[in-house]
Image 1: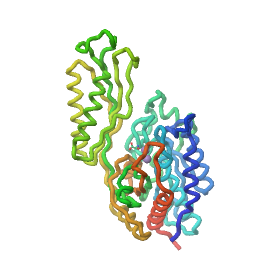
Image 2: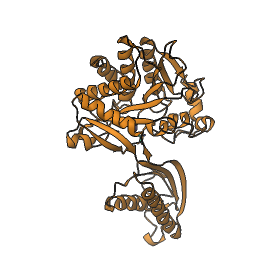
Image 3: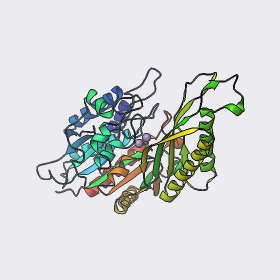
Image 4: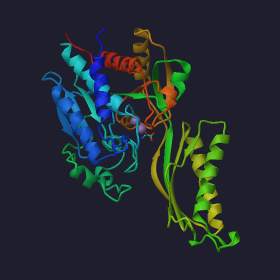
Length: 410
Ligand code: HGY
Ligand code: MN
Ligand code: MN
């Protein structure tokens, strides 16, 4: 069985992981930032070294395509993920899948085999959604889920627009999103959760992905003196926000369901030690594999916010992202399981707790994901780690599934 070039893949993961470190050594490559550009430039250099055709679409998605005169024009096998990161990120989230996709194509290209269809690898723009909402934006545009102009007009947390920033970093491409219609889409990713490690299983055959609801909530109270204002006379936006955080956490923790709730960002105005906050702005991330339960969580939050409003607190809610749960393609999932068996690796079916580009591309092509374990289930954290042997095993499973699907001639 052919295998990937492990040192090349592992070396690139580490090299890309060193790009975009701030003064404190934190890895930060937010979408369309200067550090994102550095990561993109490095990746494109590797695509060109591999002799792939490079294409960039209008939302900045990067594609490396291996096609021949015989198969050009046929729908490609597309392997993708992302290379933008969260703040103070690990080095594997997204990058592992993009670099493994390139590695698989380079390995097959060097094998002398000729696939019946083109093979392509994609790095999708703004998967993380930290600077511009929604997340998985580049793949969502690619799949026709939102108009490219609307996405380019998205205003970031720093007041810039995605379109301006892509142009500024030189990644406002010219291809129309969706220009390559995938035959099948595959994504290899770290699990970012505790299941595979806890069960001692090296491969996850991801059959579904949970629903995601992102909202930004603004609470307006009345600024007043921290020392002279009796508690009964306060309209404290900070306290109201804290009540929402507690409500969401306690409700999700008490439910005997996989529902999760996170308030990941919060800011107060005027943000002064001796002033009762007049305003609190925060985000709510709700997720559940079941669409009905997710809607019930959103409804319960809405009722709680109405009660706050009854206490004289003004509440404004802005929807940032809303994606229903996704079921991946059963046949592709079975191919992943069969590939694991052939290599003597145990696999298990899973639902992804994290959002991924695969959930968007599944709208336009059969798609599925391969997971490898995350040490301690940790991700979106510099302590994110997966053992080299596990990374290599996952990439070889990806290689085998692509080999199976590529219908090589000769
Ligand atoms: O939010 C997510 O699950 C993904 O990391 N963007
Ligand atoms: Mn990711
Ligand atoms: Mn992520």
